[in-house]
Amino acid sequence: DRVLAALVAADEVVVAGPATPTDRLVRFVREDPPSGGPVAGVLAGRRALQRPASLLAVVAVDMPLLTPDTLARLCRAVPGHDGAVLVDDSGRRHLAACLRVDRLDAEAPPGTGHGQSWRSLLAPLDLAEVTAVDGEERDVDTWADLGDADPA
Image 1 (cartoon, rainbow, N blue to C red):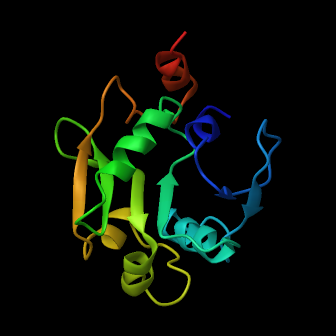
Image 2 (tube, rainbow, N blue to C red):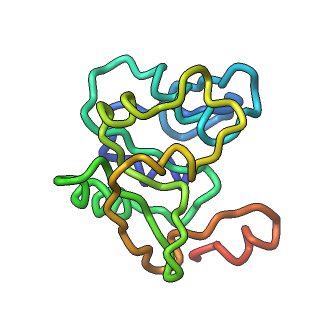
């Protein structure tokens, strides 16, 4: 729900993964076969969009410190590029981006993208890099991570 709150400005929200109760109305889809990794999830979500879109926000559901401002900064950085991606202080690209749909469609791998890396999907794209602030790039993989990421 925290990550979905960051998408408040989105016209349509598709979550690639098992259906889970949420505070926001979203459509759930699964990549085929399931557990195909981030590219398979991104492509399944892209194919499930029902409304035309020029930009696609892509965020990992395990990044609870993302905010509407994160997505706004990413979207503002897109003009003149194929998209924008969130990076940390070391330059590592995180799974939070705003991508031009036409460029994603042109560069997406054939098939489902099963087993392909986020890095490989982004490699052919000209992306603006948006530096993360206030730990928004942190992901939660363990219960300890969750405690560390609690903004309260």
